[in-house]
Length: 236
Image 1: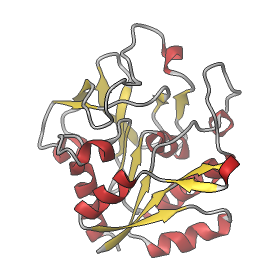
Image 2: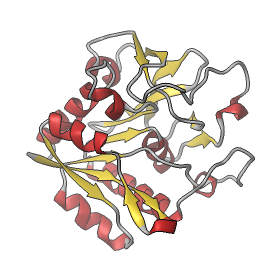
Image 3: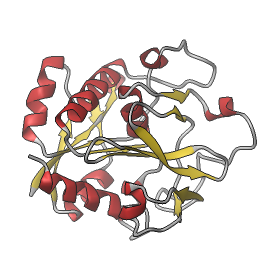
Image 4: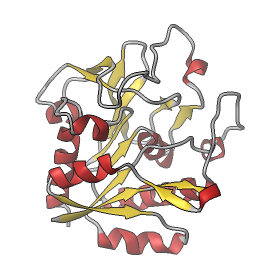
């Protein structure tokens, strides 16, 4: 079983870590060995990457807009300075090492920021008619549709499907893709739902939560973890 690192959230007032077991189960179903990651010493990042064969940047709260050159605007939510610092360094080191990376929701945004892109601090700042992206439905339920760009890695993961229905739990979204990232899926309102690298062997970020859909055998869930583990078998 190949070890796959999964970043954890931080509950600072309780001095504890948080990670949904849906991530753990999805990695195990794909044949991997889940390794929860939380580091507080920046020098530990290289050592952590030596222990794993793939990296999942998990979902969670907002990224400090300082990291993409902005002041906080109304609508920006709670941030975790420790988590931001750790995950951005992990993402950049994994990109440099060409380690397989899957960014999920916040994790897709972290991947994008690590590569020099930016995000909407709140998707209301995008303007125009928006879909509801914070669903009031069970987490596994596919809530809205998205269009997958033809010829992308994401498209190949989903066997060439042009459309997919996914769940949705976010108020931020990618605005400008980072270096060597292309848009691989968009929602009907134009919100970017997935990005992928054109240079890295497997660096993919999705705005939905496939780990919550995977246990219910919904398309859009387990396939991403299977693809990550397949890439991990070719790493190193």
